[in-house]
Length: 269
Image (cartoon, rainbow, N blue to C red; front, top):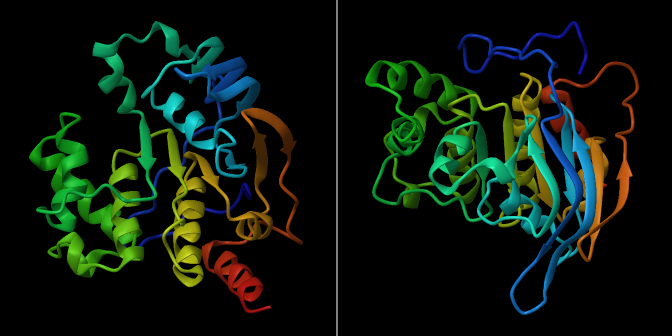
């Protein structure tokens, strides 16, 4: 991220705050294994570190361990061996009753959106604040800003079944980011979307990352990953087989619009 560039404005809203890249790694795995009942292996002796402010892709074929890693990070399941820390905290020390509090610091975007069908766009996003103790004033201040950021200002009264797939995924991203969590996880966020729509979602995640939020994206879309030029961690049968730093763009890092043009150009070739 270019040190001189300020976070982009979203539809005339105030600039999003930039977080300082300080403190322990956001994600740290040391010799982590996850074995399921029946003998299936999710992760096998996996070690990796994700630092504050990074944008990291987790790639691999189906069954490689990508979704297992995401489930472990939100503490939906527990590791079998090794050590796993998030923001310096050992996840083994977090009991079941504390998991909801832990998850307040993590935004999660799923392939199938997981929106509440009987609530409007506004209410779906507001719900993420309500469940973490946000009051009415907090909701009135934060929800309109995040809807501008995600390009949903004109859709706030719509219900999920009145939106396109790309718009539904934008709602999911808005909901995940409305609390400005230090870590945002996205599990196959473009898996159900066409290429054109996928570009918009990647632009949105890129914009969020440029505010300072650490973003980890699990995906099988290798072509998109190559064009994004971010760090790539590849899993095979639960093992880390590649950890590759992102290539540099010519000149400064592109802004969100320039990144969209780069991805669009690749789509057309």
